[in-house]
Image (cartoon, rainbow, N blue to C red; front, side, top):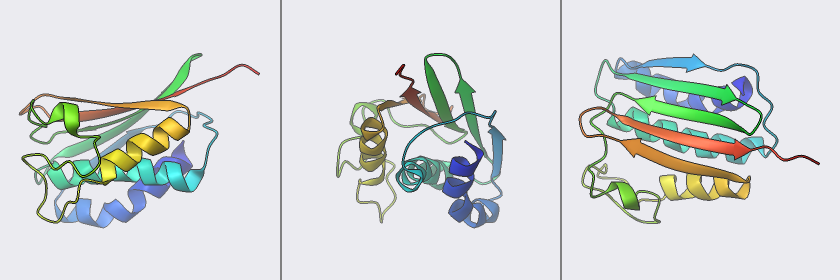
Length: 144
């Protein structure tokens, strides 16, 4: 998990540093089978969203939980949150919410959801205005 998250966060370190953002990671050893490049893209898109929407001095926490049923990877930010009316639509292609960046085309979150699904997982977002957003990816384990 360290390798995947490290790969996803590396291009975001400089933009985060410029904003004075802090990355906090809690990544116990967990083995996730899949395409490192595509999974890195999915995690990177979610983290990029957090970097863009977290105000200067904020925090982005990346946490992994490994249990017998699934591996959970969570990205939580201290941003303004996603408006309630936008939340059901954020994973739709080309959807741009109220707080979308001017240069956003609405692809990143949809692509992340597709990549996670192709790896047998699920992706959801929880958000409360003024309290930040949490993206939760679950990758289910199978018995062979």
